[in-house]
Length: 206
Image (cartoon, rainbow, N blue to C red; front, top):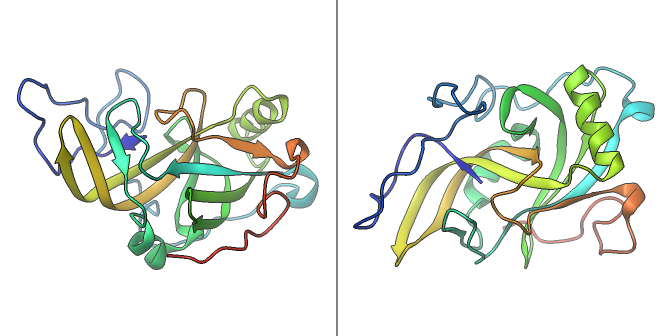
């Protein structure tokens, strides 16, 4: 789970500030505003490449309600509702390892259900990075999800930070998710996981 450089709440006594969110890897500059088109503006991306033959369909949970991640952040149910009402799934970018330059696919659907934020999308083949992420995912070597966001409303509960409203910028495919239970599957791996296993999820949007 990634966060931007703004801090909604100060760290509890005795705890140092966590490192500001970085769109790139170690040693790169901390993020300022989201990259153009990431949080606002155009909500669609060009769908180049061999869309039907090259895309890999995936689905899973990008966030789970009430579960603390390794940084002590907990997302409350409904935290994404306002953000998704403004941007829809198309306004949330699919990145690889939180790198802003590596848009590797498109999110087609995002639903807040009883468990968390369920997402469905396609890893495309329009770049070398996208094909690399697709190959890793198809082989089962890449299956984590992590969100990039700005905390709009939060509160402290001991050492935990409870996020009640967030602006969702991106959902990345990652090797090591900050929330270990945030995982995705490819369609080929489906074994009847639920209504979202092979297409549109039947659930109410919050």
